[in-house]
Image (cartoon, rainbow, N blue to C red; front, side):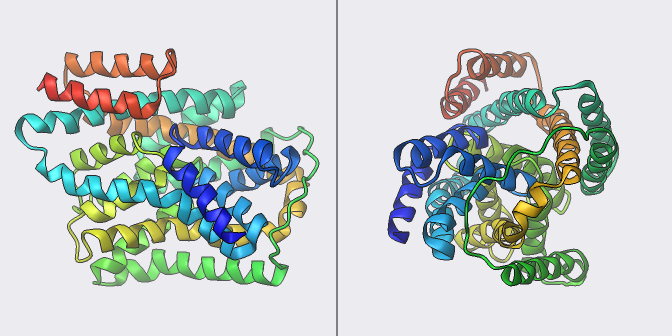
Length: 388
């Protein structure tokens, strides 16, 4: 059964283009409608659980589905199958970027411009879904200003805290949905142990790792912190990773954004952007080993958090306070994504009239003509080649 889980998710890892929201659609069609591994109520409950956690939502949903099917081994194999194709492609792209010089550098810039269109589209989609009323739009705008005016890491924490406070004080009143039925086979004792391990590792990433002179440990800590604190899925990882790797001198901003553009053109989770960064950065574990360390470090919090929260989920889900706080946090996430769109995406991606035209064209193809993101990114890279 575990082997079947691996190959089902490997199939999705090769074919699931379009980002986190699209991935959930693929999962539902495959596991609810075709394979009948779970029903709609359980699937909706799993999505709700993963939306409450920081990290890559679609990957977490996959981990939970795999765990319901084949326990802990199934969860790991679901992640491995879904993640491996895009991680390999992104690490390979890191080797190719340095070869893109002269006229070929236009390809890299075309990928950066494509990121402008992709993030703009994500801001609109997430804004409509997560900020449907005036109060949440105000939260999003305030959090965007915070993110643009403060240190990115401080702004992330402040925005999430502000969103939770506003949610608890002003976004109550919606009836909590009835809990669905799914079982991960994780005891409360195991959940508490996972929470303790997560807390210890996160504290070490904040307190111990920054004091160390070991560069490899510093990089692993940076990716673990990011995977622990990013709400809203793949697109929102951009500002935190940019704040971690660019000011530190581990990677320049153009290569950072080129990798983010390329991440839109591959299937699977956007968090495999970490695989590209780990392979591309100048550090002792550069290359494939660096890609492996960065990938494991950014996804590890998801495993620990799922194990920590799942045994207590029905208790949490029935609490109106938690539901209200989550609404505010989701609005804050939109603000963080808007700030990332302004800087560094637009600030570094738009250099002239050609870039404006290319970005608008890519946005129209994505938003109104519904072209697959990988096609738009590939065409943007080709346009960058001819536009240099």
